[in-house]
Amino acid sequence: MRQLPAYLQKKSTAIEAGALSNATDPYRPLVAGWLIEMALCLGWYRKRRPHCLPEIFSDDEFVAATEIAVPGERDEDGDVATAVVRRTSDADFARCLKRRLVAVRKVPVGADLPLFRNVELLAQILGLGETEKAVLTFIGALNAIQSFRGAVSAITLFDVVICTFGEGRRAIDGWFTRGGFGTR
Image 1 (cartoon, helix red, strand yellow):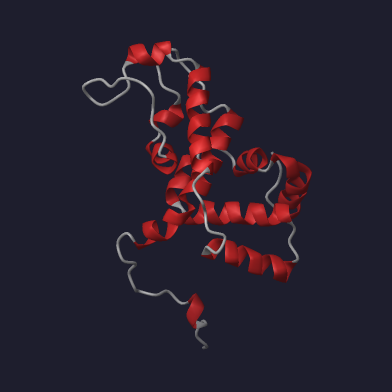
Image 2 (cartoon, one colour):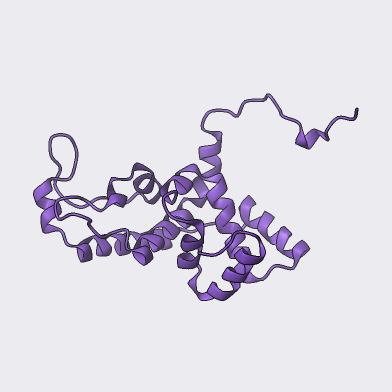
């Protein structure tokens, strides 16, 4: 019986603590921008109840990935005071997200990062277009960056991709259908 090729065999080498986090740090501005754009597009900033923060501002993974500062005074537990939440409108939360998005977009992201180089290589081999490269980059980041994946875990991948890359909706819809992912 023949053995599997070495690249398919399980390796017992442990990954050094923090190595994955350090490897994904250069992608933070890109991921933060995507998350904020999704929050704005999908209305994640809206309060479900007048006295409760919108869920994204309570989601540790979203807050960590976007480094968003939740507006308002804090109570003794460190939570935003209920009175502040009541006074803060959905439009105020949207403005908070938009301010952070402007700041995130100013942070440079190197075009020579491994994910981008790999996507370009695959694009050359497979003849991918711009929309397909964008989707592949998005899915690569979703797979590699745990805080990003956790922040969007409650939303269907299809809706997130359509929101993020709305201008290529028909192309993406066809790509998902042909790829066996189904439709909405």
